[in-house]
Amino acid sequence: MFPWNKIDTVLLDMDGTLLDLHFDNHFWLSLVPQTLSHQKNLPIERARTLVEAAYDKVFGTLEWYCLDYWERELQLDIIALHRSIVDRIQMRQDSMPFLTALGEQGKSRILVTNAHPSSLALKLEHTDLAAGLDHMLSSHATGYPKEAPQFWETLFTQYQLDPSRCLFIDDSEPILQAAQKAGVGYLLGIKNPDSQKPLKSFNDFPAIADYHDLLNSLLTNR
Image 1 (cartoon, rainbow, N blue to C red):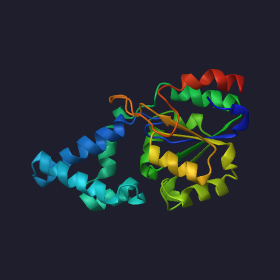
Image 2: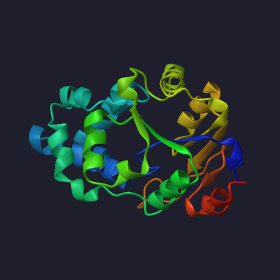
Image 3: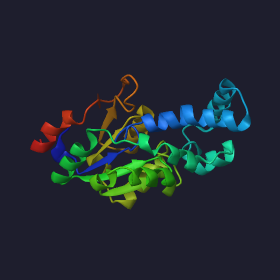
Image 4: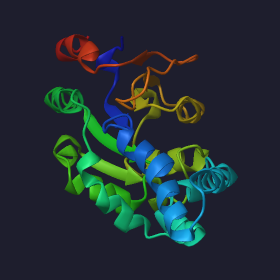
């Protein structure tokens, strides 16, 4: 699928790309409205409406990914809520074989995530993800989400990357488009970010549902 001999660095999203997005979907779409309903004595549908309106207001901005922002906005202990369901944090079963193969082929593996540092730390604590990575960059450290060109400029400068020799993998088509505009040479979507939901379709990028589909070509480094 890709000319691996022309790729030095693989940039990888976290939630939905290396980890099962079911944790985040359950947290933000179910647990948060349920907790707000209980604490504010609101009907569950009213709580869902309030939460969804709050999400829509900042979607695609750094605030949308910021746990500190949501603690203030919703007046909930977001970190404590995260810790209440850590058993749901799971790596995709195909992630580590792929990360291991990338390392064996001498590819640099950089996590690029919009996850808040507290969320990133929690997920690293409860998975073996760090063992398969060379570097990690949260968008919060740059001041810009991955949707913004400034994020990519910071990334390329910080790690001295040639974007034309990078592969970026993400489950969000708008973020893949942002990477493409920034000059990333190779792009790949993930069709099954949430193991509990149907496959997604991608209009403008190749996409897979299993990293094993890449291993044969990677291991021969064609």
